[in-house]
Length: 158
Image (cartoon, rainbow, N blue to C red; front, side):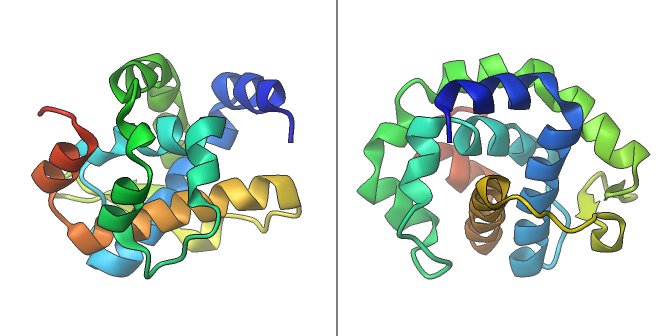
């Protein structure tokens, strides 16, 4: 997969970014049994769509867990704040698209719930690995289920 094509495609396409966020939310919800808090929504785009970080998901599984993943890949924290800042302009349109298409639902407590029945099946193997990485990240963070702990381990501040 070409590093440049992912960046251009992802950064200009709210539908694609919404699928990354959807898969993240699906993974989180499957573990935490709750919707995703908004402060965590800034994480999937810069972590999954960065080629350097996305490749750290290879060879992992649900049992790897968030803490071991960070421990094994400390480079994840490098420039993460600037990656987040750069991806923020794509976050809002992606969330809006997902809510409009009813693939995400904002519940009464302000958490995002994935609605899987409204998402079609992906037929691209290239994209499937990104969606699996987003789902896995969601599962790991859903296991932690603490915004403060997650942010601290990523070297971020609330």
